[in-house]
Length: 108
Image 1 (cartoon, rainbow, N blue to C red):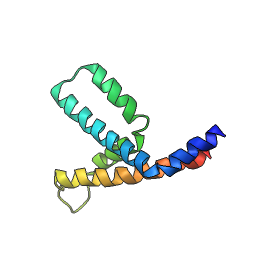
Image 2: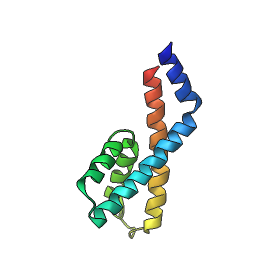
Image 3: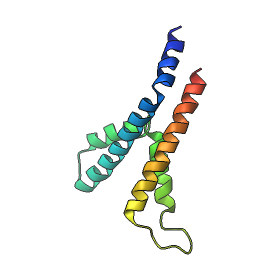
Image 4: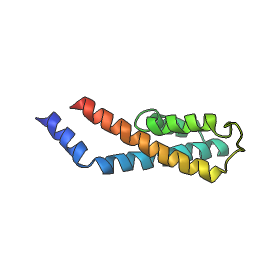
């Protein structure tokens, strides 16, 4: 009964769960990149890495995949950084939504 109640709460508030986990993932990814540039202590990367390798994994995968192909499209110059940021945000929201629904379906 408790398992079904948890799934009901997840499904009922799915937009909130997806939105919050997506926003935290984007904020943690940006914080990690800025911290690396500023020479932050190692514990910051451990905490950020723990989130990015667990609940933030869809966002991390999208960020790394898009960084891999960005600017390497034949016949096209490197697009601006703002286009990269918007692309990561949109694609990571889609990935976070798909992964959330897959986890909920698997738990059912």
